[in-house]
Length: 275
Image: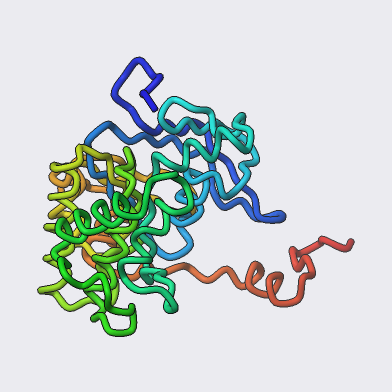
């Protein structure tokens, strides 16, 4: 697939709005990812990070707005065209999501067996090449239960890139790992980006990891883009909410008694409301 846009953006999101029932989850999101960059998406719980990723993967339907991935308007794709687009995308899930009944090698080859007509020997060669890339050479015959947490993450990355995607999505790649293993995952992502010339979108809460790997950082807050910038620009921001995120400070809310009672009872307690 060739990039159809006239600029270097592999993802373009404009005015994205999403509702779950009556609740607005994303509120006018503008977001883009450039070719060959690592874009880190950060924000507190409930800020909309995972919802944004599901939209980019065409797993959720937006209320309004447009999403273009590799030049394609994802909302306008039919089933066949969407399947072709998926071949250009790799996803590494937070838990690794390896199939416990399959060996490491079989897990990594799964996209090849499902989406290509390559012969078995060729698929095994490609699988071993990707294991080499993630420093798991020789582990193809082990079962996922025999791997450490960090090894599972690396095996998941190998599966995500086995078809040489143009864009890689990573959900919390360092979650649950000790600092040394987390640093190794960060280095691996940088190597993958440079070696395969792919764009990478990373959702993470890990500040040290984000500052190490990001070309740019997008910070979401209550369904809106709070700021997009380089690591230095994010660190230098004078926005209080951004600094609270960076320094892990809680935000105190002024308690509105009437609003609190209304949430509890579902009754409008505004003085004079029933006069």
